[in-house]
Image (cartoon, rainbow, N blue to C red; front, side):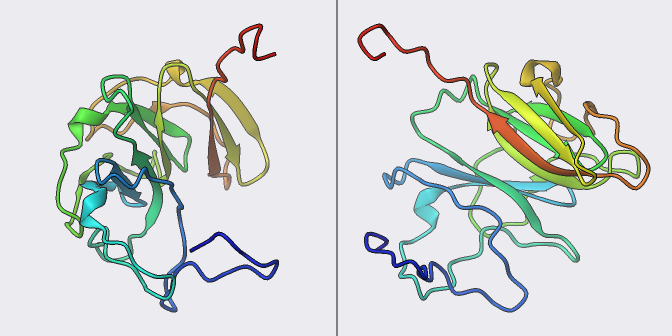
Length: 196
């Protein structure tokens, strides 16, 4: 389907006027992978890839989560069936610099299109959710603010706490400054002498 893409690109999905693409993920196609999605207002859903049927590029897709009023998806991730779920954590970052890691097992597998469950308890101090990532203890993250300030830290500096908790401060942001983006940095495996 995407083997021969021209310089002008190729339509991948039909979008409604009020829709936008928030995440693109590669699955194994074995129907054993899972999709995790989180909303700006602190709701998340985890469902099986097999709940999403294969479609052509002209299709609009299927509903992943039923959004509440004034909410939107801000982050998503693919949970590969080959990942070690005991080592995986959901990293949640808010616009005011708060974050947390939560065990994947705290997010039950549900049906696609549901209302989801609480991912974080939000308030004025934390702000809204900016992004979520699936991380392991070896990963690092970079947080970038709306004013261009950047920090890089190990995910080990982020507490592992419950799904409905608010999180702890990871980065102090100035007045009128918000966390704008989160990047996960995965440790590269060391090459053996034969591979170098």
